[in-house]
Image (cartoon, rainbow, N blue to C red):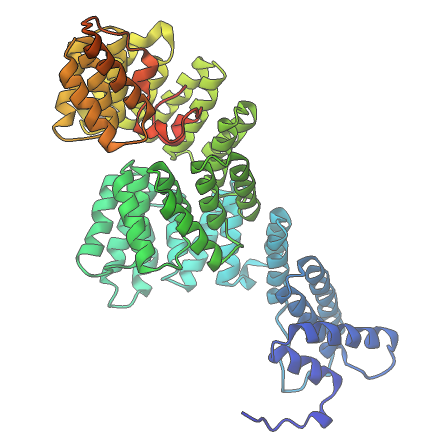
Length: 563
């Protein structure tokens, strides 16, 4: 459309403003710079009055910000603030023309905050926002402050800021979840927002309840509540809801169900970025290498400025044994988002893979500091201590996992796994494993470790009984392999061959299974009935390990094995 602007009658400031309105930021950058020089070098001329100079400086800062020249933009915005102080001090009478209004001083300070955040100067960014009086703080300023307060451990101030956001914006969901993550109870959050919610918000009370349960680490209740929202068609197929549900299942150790949910989320919204780092971890854990490569490529096409695409690519490199590249991508993710848990875990795991245990340990510790609820962080740190033969520290952290995450099959098995790798206390692992198997009979890691201990104790019949019972409901390469090895020890060679065959059909690349099978066949051919020695090493290898043959970081793929 042709406009009716008479460009010949426009003054210099109006031309600057016009470029800003048209979002021609590169042109604006050059013209604003020239305009400011004209003003500075000709103070007695009427190139621009003080108000126009202030606004021109703000426009100049905006141009630099959009061009991602953050350090320079910060400097220009600060110059604008000095001009604004001059305007306020002198009480300038020459008001700007009605064609524009002055950018509020608070907004300029917020732009400086954005520049500081873009250049990773979080402390300075917080100081800038704190300099704005409470009465002048808008919801976006309070939300930004709340996040910064959390980073430095000022939880009370964060709660106050989040509440201020909800006072003006009752349906600010991020502020709600933020409050609940800081320990504010669901009913208290509901009391803050329900009066301001529209009458059609039947879903809101359930959503708040589910998020509160997730924040309180009551995962089973959270799963039930959030699932009801999805099933009752209130929020069916809503990716934000599904992400919370998948996160709850992930944190509860329901990896298979979490993976299915993330696959559903990605199918519904291929542009979704939230929690795609967790999705990548699960794909790597299940060795879905092709899916992982496809996901990382899709995420990189969306943006290269988020941590998730690089974490996804890092897990792909880890899965394909390109460990040095994994470290590079994990570091890139950490640079983009210094608080991303998965970036620390990924880098720590890769460093362990390279046997750089001393370097891996602080990464695992930082992950645990940022997310004390993450089971994977405990396993990573314990793996470090076990690699350093510091079994006492490993046992201490396994105990902390039980204390923090609760007495579950996973945490008990984690504790038992440390005992099982400590020669003097192997027998003490069995009661923990028995309790874990009772709590969750389907948790196979407890079964694997128990059977390994029984093998060391030469209690083959008891091991066979446990394995047969598990095979009634589960069929994994490792279960069949272990049963075959135990049957070999009890001279049941034909059934052992059958079990090896099933194991090999489930994982054709499993070298250990193939070697075991060949040994039994050779014994049959030679007519030998004596049982061969089944070393502990043979029984510890499984389908989880074969594709990472020679890996020292079994915990990346198997929850409880520590070498």
